Length: 122
View 1 (cartoon, rainbow, N blue to C red):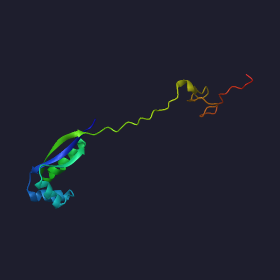
View 2: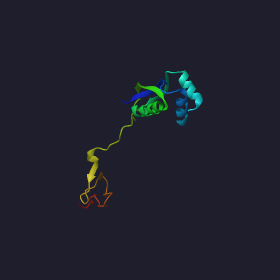
View 3: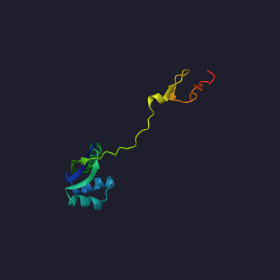
View 4: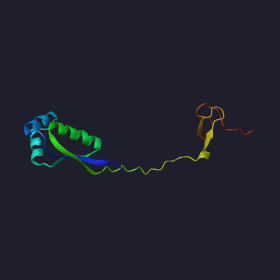
């Protein structure tokens, strides 16, 4: 199971003006930056892998924000497909005596064409 992480904004390290400028370079609108600051502590982003959370947190810290990465549950494993595989038993296979190719029993080798079927006169 893979753990989920979230990045929580806790406050400013730098001035509000510097934070606004650097966050705008990251593509965050001034209105959103103001909401982040006024609602702190606030979850900025969740449901991430630890690697993604660290990269996200690094960007916010570079902009002058103080953040915390928190474990936040686990990713659910995808449901396994309940289809059963239809695998033929070993006795249903034959090995070509000419080329060694293994295949389901048939009248001839699908690789080299050697005929397996015995004639009725033998």
